[in-house]
Image (cartoon, rainbow, N blue to C red; front, side, top):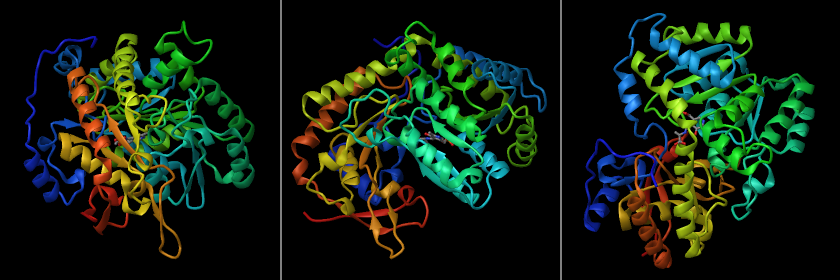
Length: 453
Ligand code: F0G
């Protein structure tokens, strides 16, 4: 059962099937363009959408809004130093600000940044500074059906080959825990340590994209031999102990609605980062956040490492997966940390890749049950080759990301009913074509038109 009770409620509007159809049409069949209040269950993202605890709301009132050296900053810094063990801590307004400043201080045109899988903002920030970005995920990580426990692992042979090929053009290597774009799959401690050893031999620093470090720590405790008796805090400390620096979006495992940070051991990196932080985000003791946000995230980071909270979070995802599994729904397996990822290519196998089966599935789920999900497939990750031909993404997933501590088991039951209904009638759904799109990050704003029917 949920390890909390509810003290405050927020009503959700229910829409009729006809109202949902009108809303989706008005949004040009792109769920990013829907109004939030037209989505009774909103699984678009787990980022910044969580519910705060009573302890966090209480902490918010303690916010010290001093411009420099506030009490709230000290709590923030002490908490992050305890978890990461890193000397230099910098708040940012969210994760991508930390990525952007890191790219500005360390990345130059022609550089190469390896990662298990870059999240889209990380990739965009590295590329914006002129770098080539490489995803070095293991082959199993790309196979939705594989049941391996650590499908977020980096492929060590690919990493060694990358270092041989690009050597001194690699200013740092990243590893994303958990691997969001590959299904929220975890990275094992063994893999993180092996990556670090290879990088140390080549003199390349390791930067962790730590958005979901607490969920990854829980997976290590559950699935990796030797960690069953360690606390999540100890495991998190061991993860960060392998890194030279980290970027973090506190909108995920900070259990907050806004916030981020950058941490590093190297004082030269810290000085360069600090100078840009002042220019772009704010004075180093608040970095784009209010004192109350610093308070809230300091509490949230500890709550994310509470064992009972993680048990509940993972149990709700496994509950959903087991219900869908019984009906034979194709999904990314095993359960990820923050989301269930439907395999839209197999689900809508009558729709060709360039007619966007993921969008067909996302829109069907909205029309049937008012649930907003998101495509992580060809619209988001596809690309055009030199001849201008559209190349589909390797995976065609639909992500149902779960806001933290927001929905209850009966919301999940509704979701199951909706997906089963779409599954039974799947052949009646057709694909889409894009009638308007931006050059970069087109998924946010493009307009679709349904094909067929
Ligand atoms: N890295 C990862 C792995 C992420 O998942 C995100 C955000 C970021 C960096 C950027 O953080 O949003 O605070 O700037 N992911 C959200 C999502 C948006 O829906 O998966 P941010």
